[in-house]
Amino acid sequence: MPAAYGAIPASASPRLRNVSRSDSDAGFIFGPPPPSWSTSLRYIFLSNWINILLIFCPLGILSGILDWPDALTFAFNFMALLPMAKLLGLATEELALRTNETIGGLLNATFGNAVELIVGLIALHNGLITVVQASLLGSILSNLLLVLGASFLAGGLYFKNQRFNVTAAQTSASLLCIAVLAFVVPAAFQFTIAGKDTADVLLLELSRGTALVLFIIYILFLYFQLKTHHEFFTAEEGEDAQTEEPNITLPAAVTLLLSVTVLVSVCGEYLVGSIETVSEQWHLSQTFVGLILLPIVGNAAEHVTAVSVAMKDKMDLVIGVAIGSSMQIALLVTPICVIFGWIWNQPLSLAFSAFETSVMFVSIFVVNSVISDGQTNWLEGVMLLGAYIVIAWAFYVMPNSL
Image (cartoon, rainbow, N blue to C red; front, side, top):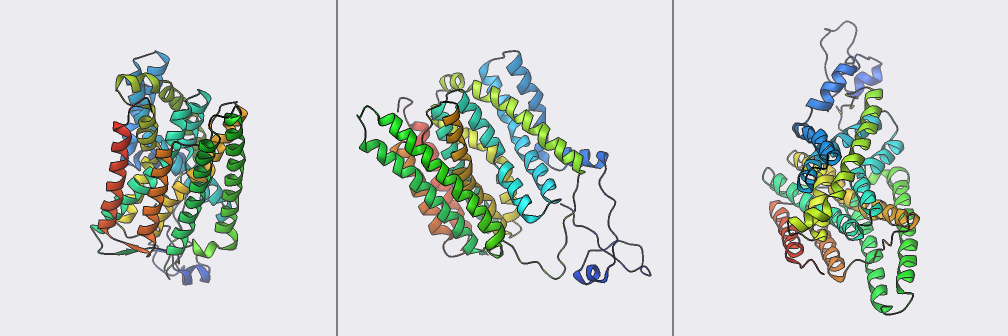
């Protein structure tokens, strides 16, 4: 976002210049005019090239209403969700600028993975349990390996070595290890009680109780991050640090958030409704669609953001976007899906297959090894991307019957 302009003495030239702390402390205030509806609309639609894909939004909705072929419906709505994920992030950032740090953090946590949550809940309501589980796992792996790997590679092409706050990174990575525990225990539990008459009921009880624990841990992490240990997650500001100013009006930000959320729900409904037919026509398993294709929609905004800031050597932000988003999926989105499955009487459990659980465990182990020293280079990016390609290929060649 454009930097704010600062204060200048009354006797000085009327030209605007950057704010320095000494100016602010002296009480001189001279800033840019506040955004209007016209400038807000221009910024919303013209601030990012990906908004070109918004043309697919009406096409996707029409394809669903007019019952066009499922392949077209899937493709149009898939493309439409890409820019809407970015617009959700924009609306959240603009609202966060008008609040304090705590509320801003809650807004980002709530809407940061809104697309994944909405699409997951729609698939869950339609009874596509396999797709939901695969999309949850795929979102975690996509952020950890694809987004982080591409960012390390892109940044490494401009800087020989890049450093980041290892304490904050390890905190999020440790929370992911807790998530792995929450997935491994139900899988082992399912294997242990296999064949018993009450196996399914007991597994759901374990999963729902575990989901509540994960949700509580996430709430406590927010308190840890924003209140008791916020210094671990706050970058130090320079002497001439600039204050970000809103680029769109408050009514425009609220309207954008609500309207895009509604559009995501509509397009997500048509997208999910076409998955079964498309997976058959394209000879893809529902697991592959959920684990590889759907996360591309939800992580498109994070991917672009992480790569662009990595090339500016802002690696703390890269870690926050990639690992932080994975942690949110594991500790926030996954428990919410399990809890809603409980409400809707859908048998969504945390018992992933042995292969899926192993993939997640190894992926988090690899990422922990890469970030443990607090610095990275382009080769580590290649390693993470290679790991993601291997996993994607494995799920692609996996038989549909498994």
